[in-house]
Every structure is written in structure tokens, then in C-alpha cells.
Amino acid sequence: MADKLNAIAGHYRQIIQHLGEDAEREGLLDTPTRAGKAMQFLTKGYQESLEQLVNGAVFESSMDEMVVIQDIELYSLCEHHLLPFIGKCHIAYMPQGKVLGLSKFARIVDMYARRLQIQENLTREIAEAIERVTNARGVAVVVEAQHMCMMMRGVEKQNSLMKTSMMLGSFRTSQATRTEFLTLIQKR
Image 1: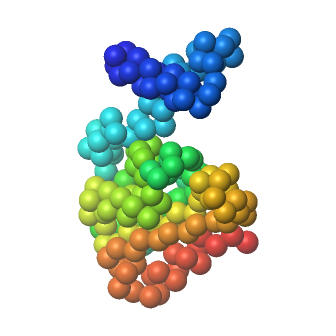
Image 2 (image 1 turned 30 degrees about the vertical axis):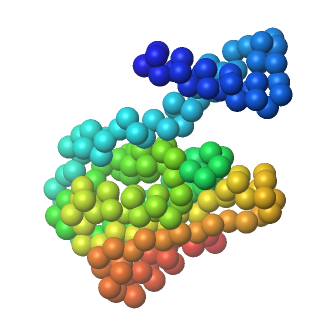
């Protein structure tokens, strides 16, 4: 792991120099290592697997109505510019004899968000992972996020918000189920 960090730090040092800065300047001396550690943390999802993360936290239950987990914070990096996008994830599922431990939803969101990503794929990956581990009758995921690549550069639109959704199973086939979920996550 130290070898990887040293390699990443070396690349950051070169980037700093190519930008025209003095990488040996006091304020920047430790920046390559700090930036390397930060990047390793921000992409730690590559080191995690769904099976290890869930760790058997799927429990038998007679619950067969909609379960909603709302406002799960997420932080990810846009794969196009390596700039952050920050937002919230809302998840619903229709259990079918099994429920997933509550904290596992946030962990699943984090695992996929902590990879170089586009929001559209992140939304799909979260939904498919929850469907896979719960065998639910339906899964719905909505992600809403602000993208620094659109706010800090390019068009520089500060108030833009991207929303993506993925509906699987009963959320895709039943308009009533989909509407119930979307109504439940609306802000009042």
C-alpha cells in the first residue's frame, strides 16, 4: 500500500510542477502525499466488494410493503474531470421475505460513490446491488447531486442539480408503486 501511495504522490508532485508551481515550497512540500492519501480514500470503493460489505446482514422478515431510506449523503468523483459531485440518494425496496440491515444501504451507496463515476451509472449500480442482495420484488433509487465540473469550470452554473432514477421490478411495472415512492421522497 505504501508503494501505491508513493507512486500516486510522485504523480501529484509532477502535476504541481507542470502547473508552474514549486513542489518544494514549504506549503506544497507534503501536498503530494496528502493528495495521494485523499485520492485513495475518495476511491476506496475499488477495494470493497458487495459480499464483504453486506456481511450476511440480510434478515428474514414478513414485511412486504415499501421500505424507504431517504437522504443518504453521497460524495463521488466525476470520471471526466476528477472533480466532486455531492448529493443525496433515496432508496426504496419491496421486500420479499428478507430485509437488509439499515446501515448497509449507506455502505452500498458509499462503495459505489467512492469510485470514478458518472451519476447515471452510480444510480444503476446502487439499484442493481440492492436487488441482488435482497431479492426484492422491486427497487427504486433516486440520486440528486450538484457537480463541481459544472459549477467550478465550463458553464459555471451554481444552482444546477442533476436528478437520476432507476426503477426495477414493481417500481418499473406499477405506476402506483412508483408514484408512492416519488411522493414519499418529496420535500415539504
